[in-house]
Length: 137
Image 1 (cartoon, rainbow, N blue to C red):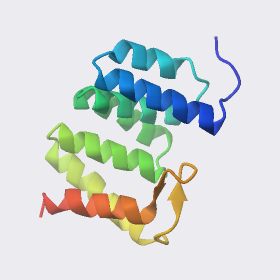
Image 2: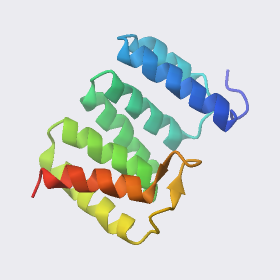
Image 3: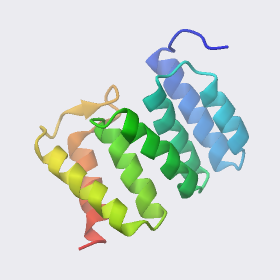
């Protein structure tokens, strides 16, 4: 049964708990924790992707994150995690394409612009994208 959308604090706590479960080899518990939250479909896909990355399962993460990008094509954080999952899955051409697109989009933003309630800034994402792109240049 789905309930009202959780507060940011409750949702972040659930994600943190899910990541701990995933890193400890308890992926099923991690997924259950997220599935119980009333998240919008794109956010749920991003978080499921992050949980699969924490569980060292980049192939499954890629599928969740591809869905997130499909559902929220303008979401820079979703695209970042998708590119990261592609990179870890050794899908080099697709990862490079996503990273170049991210670099282009991030260049248009002010460095202090933040996403997801201050979780990450444009400057931080740009630094990570630049680092990942370095492996393709």
